[in-house]
Image (cartoon, rainbow, N blue to C red; front, top):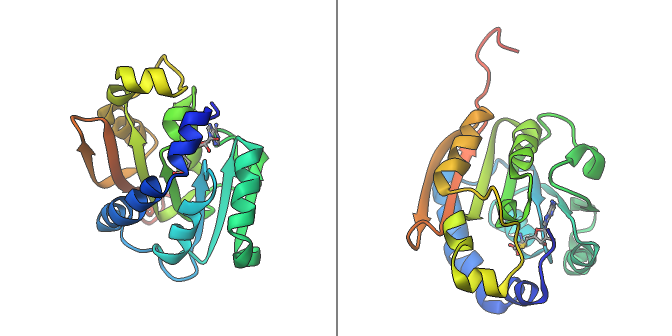
Length: 210
Ligand SMILES: C[S@@+](CC[C@H](N)C(=O)[O-])C[C@H]1O[C@@H](n2cnc3c(N)ncnc32)[C@H](O)[C@@H]1O
């Protein structure tokens, strides 16, 4: 589901970028570590592209692909990230179908990033399944999510547009990762369970499994 005007304003505001840079990135790095040099990364729901700068500069990704449902966001991200040239590839499409959007094969990315997007997707389990499919064995999934607890608050319901049924708690989100074979390296919740941050990995198969 696309963001409404209020959320576009909030997500692109300097305080939100500051929070992402000063608080979220260090937490995600603490749980998942930096990527190995040259690692290809993917951001689902890149918005206007600030997270992609952080993925390249702070997490050390070699290249970054990104998908967003909103063509206006892809346009904004393209302008913001022009200086990275072909290290960045942007596509309009859905995180629930990365093959169509980015021609993404299984096991393609050493790092996959979710900065607050999965709660926007009605079929959020399909998005998790896609993340688990495209992440490479040994790769990292970094996530920052808004739970059903936050979405039920009157302020969220009045100000923003989100799918209303089948939302996830922090526990349900983590369970879904495990259901797709991802192993959580660490996570935390903030503000009475409103927000979930963490990192998970796709285990490297041991001899004979692949
Ligand atoms: C809350 S914003 C977060 C944007 C960015 N990750 C950030 O942290 O600034 C959610 C983004 O997800 C996008 N989005 C919503 N549903 C999507 C889907 N099914 N596939 C890809 N992107 C989607 C929206 O267009 C929006 O840009």
